[in-house]
Length: 150
Image (cartoon, rainbow, N blue to C red):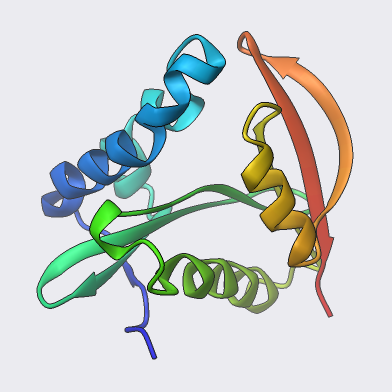
């Protein structure tokens, strides 16, 4: 069982940005530029209460960015430290995202990922997300997916 995510504080920013850098850097060559999460302003997201982190043994090992929208909760980012890959932290963060969406009264959670991140698309499909459409935003070719929550 993993620790419950907590809301991030500004003191967590450096660790969050490091995890994002490690998680998304491998995709730069595939996409031809930095993925969207590497361009986000984490100081603003943390200040707005949008970022959640999971700590193990005193170190942040994973993060989740949730953005409430009018008709759905946007799962904007989920990333795990390289040292925590395969531990189930990512899965527990995805479950927490769904729990948070339900608790906030949403019946749908949505996300998007780059079309070349095929392993992510496959993972999200396996856990109940369905592709809704594809579009180019900010020069990035994205696959949009949604999951209806019970």
